[in-house]
Length: 329
Ligand SMILES: NC(=O)C1=CN([C@@H]2O[C@H](COP(=O)(O)OP(=O)(O)OC[C@H]3O[C@@H](n4cnc5c(N)ncnc54)[C@H](O)[C@@H]3O)[C@@H](O)[C@H]2O)C=CC1
Ligand SMILES: NCC(=O)COP(=O)(O)O
Image 1 (cartoon, rainbow, N blue to C red):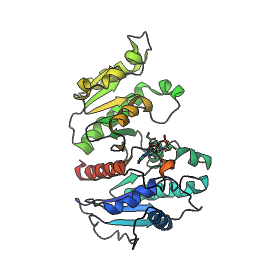
Image 2: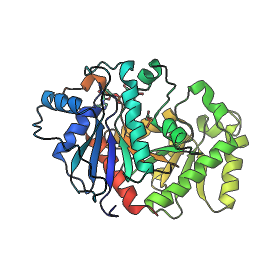
Image 3: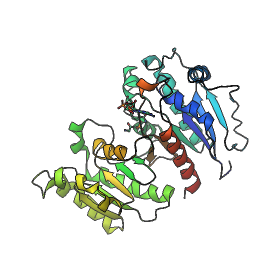
Image 4: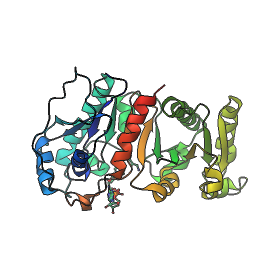
């Protein structure tokens, strides 16, 4: 495969959501990559007609032994077991969603694809089908036998990574252990160098409690867990700042010094990132043996088939995947 032209697989996600719409909108864009969309061709054609996209021909021959064609958009055909109604997801199509992911993962592992970009899925629908599923991040970690993955959302000028991902808030404090924090920071540090060329990234670390625990009077996790872990890693030469109170960490004075912010939990870090750049950020999974980026939003069932969904985040996710394949060290 050419080092300069990646072949990326795009999983179209929940068929009743906006994933298919966003994949269809790729017709109007050209990337320095070959894009292969994992989707039911009938769904692609039906939704394209609904959105008034003229489709003359779908290319389903991926020609994996040929070099990728820059700017090409191809289809990897799969079949939805159940009819798709925009805005109305059904657990009967959960197997189709997982088939997309499994096809993408194995294709990346075999070197057919340089990386995968995922459109959104609805976690609860997959669970309704009787399949325990908390997110792409955790599923990819499990399927690739990865020891520690890290969810990081990135716009062009801000990166926020998470120590914990999709857990009930009640469980979060107990999940933050020295071992987890150490592994997350090591993975983050390593992959910021590996994929983004940051040789010694500055990582700004949030406290867990208000005011970073106020010297133990508002919670002890900073004193007992976060500080000792940061000190251990700082002695090894990592550039870590914190734990800082999360409310004031997210201000320009601190952010301008940081390559990435490490938040302790999902809704500590992501609302700030999304306020800053919803619709133009990518979700990147670090710590995997393959490259995976994703959109920053969900299935937006209210917009499926309406033509009102913005493809900005999918564009950013594809751009980041291309960047990562080309800058990987
Ligand atoms: N990468 C993924 O697979 C993700 C999946 N989800 C899933 O999505 C489902 C719905 O989650 P919500 O919290 O409702 O978030 P959501 O992102 O689907 O929707 C939140 C609001 O943003 C709007 N919106 C979302 N994407 C948009 C786009 N591209 N253009 C214009 N407007 C857009 C929606 O219309 C809605 O008003 C959940 O099941 C959740 O698990 C959520 C985040 C990421
Ligand atoms: N808020 C991010 C999100 O829910 C996406 O998670 P994942 O499916 O990429 O793990």
